[in-house]
Image 1 (cartoon, rainbow, N blue to C red):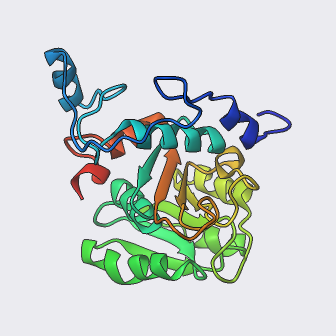
Image 2: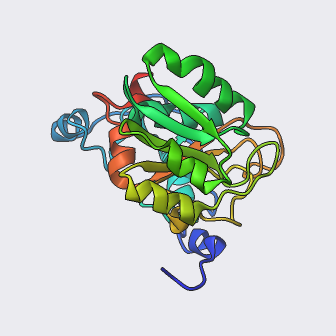
Length: 240
């Protein structure tokens, strides 16, 4: 790990230009794309999607530019952009969890997320324990054989509790559990992936956008997870 990590420098170093050298990449307004090579189509439907554009719900050049920038900012291998923060959260959790699994989360979690975890996931027989995320002993004691995920926010919304991400990561790794962190309140200030989070999610509506005129979300993680999430055959982000 670098002693000093500057997300802004990493983003600037990406040198993303449009095809004519414009400093702002052109916005793609096409919903579908043409395959100029039949083999490319075959590879795409097999889930081998690197560099291929199929349908804008999957990838298009505009959201790929944004996803790559977010991955660079978070220092993750890959990223995926969504229509909202709740879409990022729900897609990630439903990609990871199945019937019978168990999740540990903060009792002060953002209201929309709390409602999803408390009221919606029981439909899928997914159990959730709500704990004081700053009480590490309580987190550890809540671990069960079926625990699949610890979910928290870097800085909780709205009570502003600060999660000890390295310690939560240690608990998660010791028990073979995934740590997912919502970093909505602290982009560019906290880098959860570098502190041990496996997946980082965002509501980009808030601090990343900054102007309250856009609704969007993001998921940052390993290339393996993002590829699985966006797989055209069984990826949650493609099929929900």
